[in-house]
Length: 42
Image 1: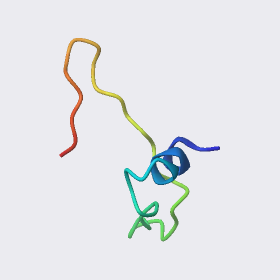
Image 2: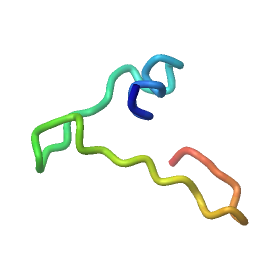
Image 3: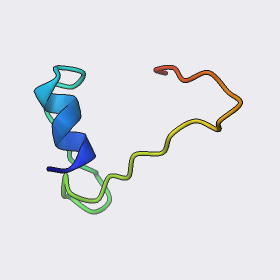
């Protein structure tokens, strides 16, 4: 299972959005915050 699918399963996202450039939902890459920084949602 992709990381993006886990976000949908845990209800952080309703669905993985379609990228307007590639016109696909499978090209997203999850990028974690640096180790010394607190994570957040923007």
